Image 1 (cartoon, rainbow, N blue to C red):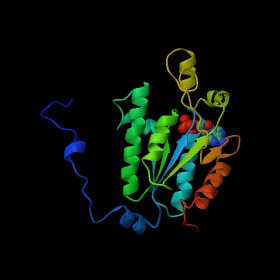
Image 2: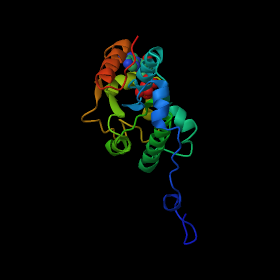
Image 3: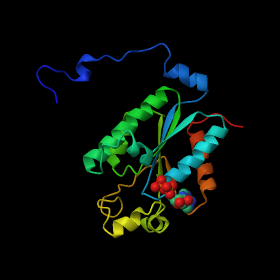
Image 4: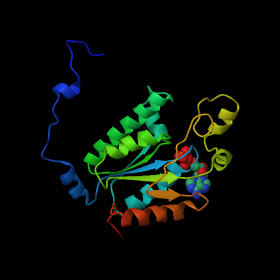
Length: 208
Ligand code: ADP
């Protein structure tokens, strides 16, 4: 908490610009740093598709990092819960970490439910033009629940989990995602769809 004797960092700290910068590191890696943001219900296929896409990007020679919702919540955001405030703080931190990774020249993929339009918009607006791409993994709730890869829907139905996105907490679907995926197609076809659109939008330039 701030008192009259303390100041906020933004009042006293000045960004230090080093010689080895984002442009230098990006050139070294022969790629455009970017954030590829997957959003969708739990069990929709975000981690599966992001993981498969990352393999393809790595095979093409790209340098990547996949920020996974569960993994981040086990570490960086272990102090956060699932209230509206905590969900927004979770995504704010992820956006900041992604920015550091992009500054290091990486193509970052992220797999977070990220149910609220505003939080996704905040991340998008904090990125430069052409650095953020939103992928909506559009899988019907019934399909996600039938898959239930982590047994979470079962726990929701038995009352063990409260405030679960899609059931007792809202999911605001993107209205104009950059890529709209329907998972009634096999994963490798969805990955090809992503690659084609990433190429077309100039996000990736390397090819075999
Ligand atoms: P999320 O990260 O969105 O919570 P996961 O990727 O962890 O979802 O789980 C999705 C589950 O659905 C996995 O068990 C995956 O094998 C399965 N699945 C079946 N078909 C598809 C598909 N076409 N795309 C993605 N996942 C699929």
